[in-house]
Structures are given as structure tokens and as C-alpha cells.
Length: 134
Image (cartoon, rainbow, N blue to C red; front, side):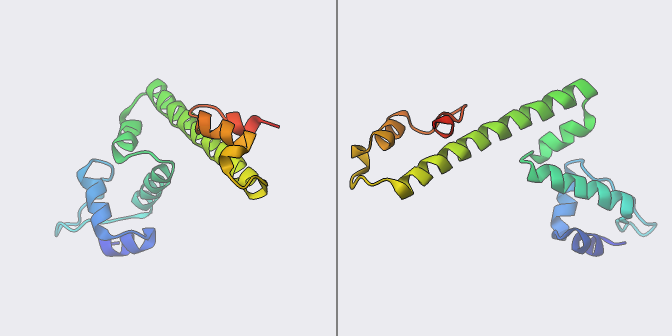
């Protein structure tokens, strides 16, 4: 299939596929007339790129995954997973604080011991400190 059909099948614009090709992520074969030819294998690979992008990896990181050895690839994935766990902890702590705010009976947040403690500590950077509280 041609690039327009491939882009439609993937739900992206054609310039996205051209960009992925320019940075070395895709290499669709060319027809004798020079047109890019996308088959199911190339579309599957493009879907993997989309999925990896949704995990927060940059195109450069995705390219590195493709050219790295197994140990480096595992290390890159482990690093990304650690970042995701940190983000989850931050979101859980934020959610716990917001849940507390919906039930807080103090007219001024700074008068509430829990709110004041949270404000003094700020959002946890690496642990779900606030979310772990009873």
C-alpha cells in the first residue's frame, strides 16, 4: 500500500511516517517508480513505534532500543519503568492529597495539620509518602 493508505491505517499523518523514515525507524521498500510501499510487516513495526511512544519513549530512545544489544535494551527499559513507577507514586500522592481536600473541614488549608504537613513537604519526588499515610 502507499503512504497515504498506511498513514490512514495507523491513524497518523503521512509526514509522521516520513519523519520516522528520516530518523531511521522505518525503511519501507520502494516501488520501481520510487514510491514507498507499506506492507503488513512495516505496519506492524510502525504500531510498535506508536506503542513505545505511548510509553513515553522518544524517537531517539526507540531507535536506540532497535540498535542496542540485549543488556543495553534491558537497562533502557528498566530505567523507563522506574520513571513510570515514580510518576505513579507522584500521581497517587497527589490523588490522596486531593481526596483529603474534598473532606477537609478546615476553612483555611494551612489550619489543617495534614494539609499543612503536605504543603511543607511538597509533592514527594521518589516515593508515595503521602499516599502511604493511613
